[in-house]
Each structure stands twice: as C-alpha cells, then as structure tokens.
Length: 101
Image: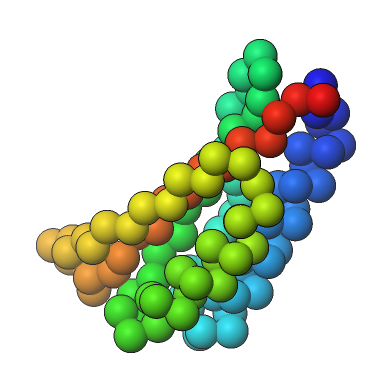
C-alpha cells in the first residue's frame, strides 16, 4: 500500500514541477493540488490547469507530459473553452496511476 506520506510527496512534487513550468511561461493560473482516488490495486492522481496563451500551449504540454511520463497509465487531455464573461483558455486535465506495492 502506498502510504499517506508517499501520496503527499507525489502530490507536492508533481504540483511543484507543473507550477514551475506554468511560471516559466508566464501563465496566470497555477495548480493547488492533485485529487487522489484510492483503488484496491493502485492510487490514481487527477489534476488540471488552464492556459490562456495558445501560442505557449504546445511547449507547456511537452514539458508537463515529460514530468508525468514516469508514472503509469497517463491520460492527458486538453479542451478549448470560450466562456461568456472572460477570456478563452485551454483546459488541460490529466490523471496517472501509481501501483500499490
């Protein structure tokens, strides 16, 4: 079983690294934390962030996917959002699994 300390360490590491990438590209928004879903054989971590500048999206995606590539069963999606009352942005969501020992 993955301990609570290990889950917190993964959460802190991933969020910190992704926020460093977002800061590097002058993104206005940062991640707070990952959501954690405990399953019998693994733990799934879920996260999301937004990017308003489309010209930076490919570079950000490449770097973030590199950070997450060390985890199992990575799912990575992005969707363009055009809200009625604010600037459009791309919502990026991802999840990955860590097997229980």
